[in-house]
Length: 305
Image (tube, rainbow, N blue to C red; front, side):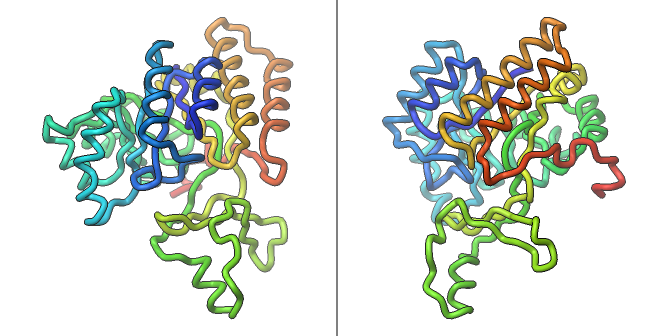
């Protein structure tokens, strides 16, 4: 079982490589969606070179929803990415998949269509169009993941740490809200803003706006460190860690905890004490204004549908 993690800078990417991740996801602002940081072409080249020297792979995020203007920019960007030596992409837009059919622009890709990847049938469909693996929707519980693993023809990726986006709108919802209440928009790009339900004071849904629109996230972030052994025994190929809201140093500590857990699983040395220690490490490294739970992982299939 391999680990894939986001990286927000050249320095963090190097730290993650040294920590033991197998693949990194990096990108820039035009095509990369919900990334913890944006890199220049020169910085992406540095990360790719460092990763290849360590025998690791790098995927460039192109998982945004692409309108006509960005589709027109995709071909020159793909040429540049290929020239950097990137190992692949993350893709969720059908228009981009169409472009990737051309050998001039082709790169293997991780199919990342957010909430849409909920069945092996969909995974296998995109495998026919160049997908080398697929990121399973966060709403898929373990009982359904097991079925997908049996039928999927390409490797599956399952998120084990980080935030879960539950809504995206191309509209500038925060700006619209501030205009509606006749207040000056303040810090609408700040990633530390939260929504709360009127009758649920303990609810706190992260919200921020960027060039891709407005993004709203689940009440709590994922942490499946205690279930890594179960995932490994299920035959899962990749675990995905998302550092969107984490501090640069904190995310590295989280990744190190998962690397240690994977090593223990592989050696058959998982103990309750070890899991307690690693879980506490993650709790300490996680942003203090954000909570953690297991998301949909333990749900029955009927609860989600």
